[in-house]
Length: 328
Image (cartoon, rainbow, N blue to C red; front, side, top):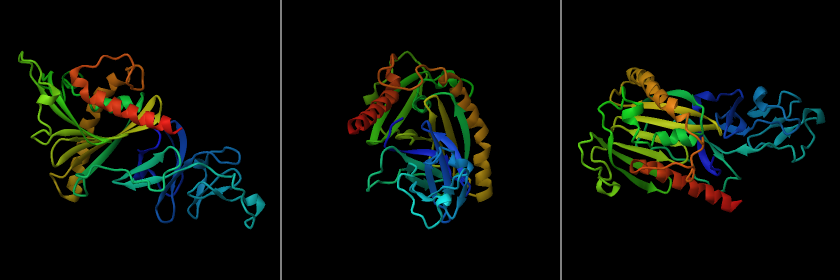
């Protein structure tokens, strides 16, 4: 995983006033909400005797260890050691690592890494998805590294084979381009031009239109958000949530606004979930067999022209990893 990045790690509805323990980025973390409904995140380990805070409770907006009642605020500082009395000062060493959080669009992000800079900007979502859309979400476990799950959504060559009886119908095996552009250093757009093989060679990436005239594109927001921009009114969004080096939770959403009626709009979004899950499971069956599990620039693979989006992702991912290594 790349440190010093905002990662989507949960949906908003998964965190309430009671502590919630999860594993993310290979760490045990605990989340809870305070009286103002703000979400907080600490490492799930009491600074006293190492007990999981997630099996404790929340008292006046602070999380309390179930073992000896040590209480922690949002910064991770212990504010109370009951055995010492409420009037006693708490030594600074009783502190748990805290991660900054951000909540928007029904997702919860954490800044995973070193101490956040004072001018830390909030994470970004997709500007053209707003409150006029209705969505539904499914959580899907994959037994592989998040980078492999992500790359699968940038892979434009696999559709006629992995999805031969769903979205890959039509035998469009020949790949023109694909077109790739970076809107900025962390947002990549992929333009797909697949067609029947008529004996002519595929067009080179520089020969295909950017952007696609029909508006269709795949869009990646580093490090772990993606959208399939099917049309102005239909989107599929995925968050590739790292659990650890060998496990990922795919948060898969279907968005629509072609039926802008509250109850019916939400129902239509939910009705689209089963087919999207089937498509995801067609991918999962193949992707979990890839070795090595983490992606990388030099992992013994031979990429083809159609893998240009994957190559671009790997290069940017390596740049971010190298930047972290230079800072440490």
